[in-house]
Image (cartoon, rainbow, N blue to C red; front, side):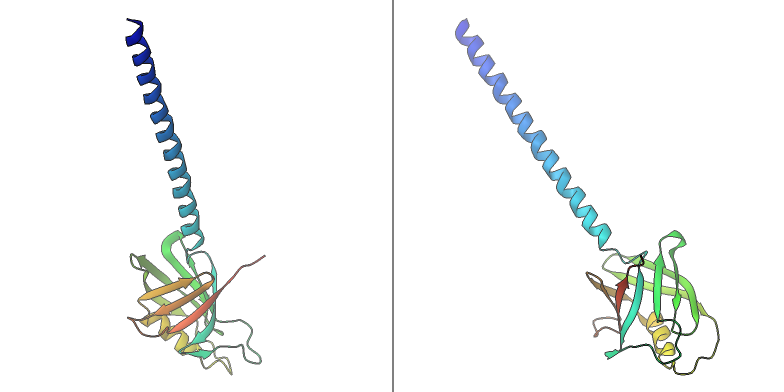
Length: 159
C-alpha cells in the first residue's frame, strides 16, 4: 500500500512541475508578445510629424523666405491628415490597410502664392499617387507600386 502512495505522490509532483513549467513558458511568451506589440506601436506612422527630405530622388531644402517646411501628420482620430506643402496648409483623410498600404483622399489646400516654393505641387501630387509605404526607423517612404520612392520623410519629434 505504501508503495502505491509513493508512486502516486511522485506522479502528482511530476504533473505539478509540468504545470509550473507551462505557466512560466506562457508568461515568457506573453512578455514577448507585449514587447513585440510595443515595437509595433513604436513603428507606427501615425501621430508623428513627417518632414519631407527627398522628392522624386532629389533632396528637398527650405528656400529663402519659406516659413514652413513641407510635412504632414497622420492623426488616428478620424483618420485625418494635416500638414503644409511649404507654403499652403493641407488637410484630408487617409486609410491604412494590410501590406503597408496607404491612400490619401479628400485632400484640400489653401491657395496662397509663395515665391520660391515650386516643389509644393509635386509634393501634393505624391500624396495623390502614393499607394504604399516603407518604414525604416524614423524614415518613411511613400511609394506607388514597386517603383523607387516618390518621397522620403524623416520623423520630427517635438519637445
